[in-house]
Image (cartoon, rainbow, N blue to C red; front, side, top):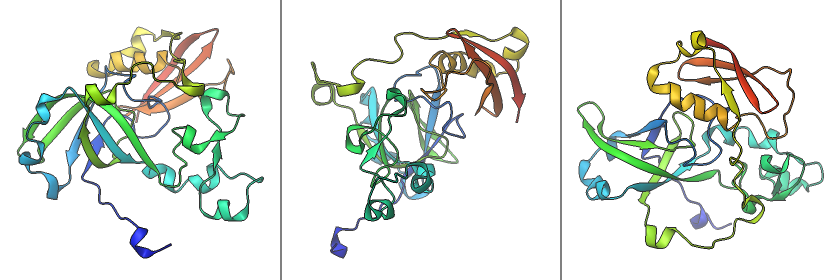
Length: 249
């Protein structure tokens, strides 16, 4: 490969939210609008002029990096059926989409898997407001993000309804929403009281969409994930999710 074909990018910002790890993060953007995140710009990009006119848009595109998956993709997606060359590149031409049960392979470019040749993500989020703060300059308050805390943002672009919304578009094997049927969520009041008020509605929404891997269905297993400086532990049986414990981290 010619060295002129290599490209290097510097993050312009990072996201701040209540998800320290990928377990529990919404599977796609726009699914959990009850939880807000903040985009904090890196010092070279804290010029309010760079955002002039952005407040006229309701939604924005985020171009970002699967930064935690970079170090995991060799181990997570190794396939003994692939050639050594494919393995050495650190990516696989096929992956196992969770929504297909984790046992059916599809082409990586037909999925949104993080284990890609270039670990770049794309999310459409709602721009709630823009704040100017004395310590960090302009901050974007957004909702509907599917990124973990501290994810590097490479670029921000406005969502254009006339161009970005395609009536009649086909969704392939992912055409049906997996969230037409939500779980019933039971959180005992004494446990819910441990969750800050501003996160209680978002926690219910996250749990109702079943954060477990799609191929997990053990009613006796206790699952757990970190959220808003809390460890949330729960079980699922017969479409009922019951929170068993909430622990301060």
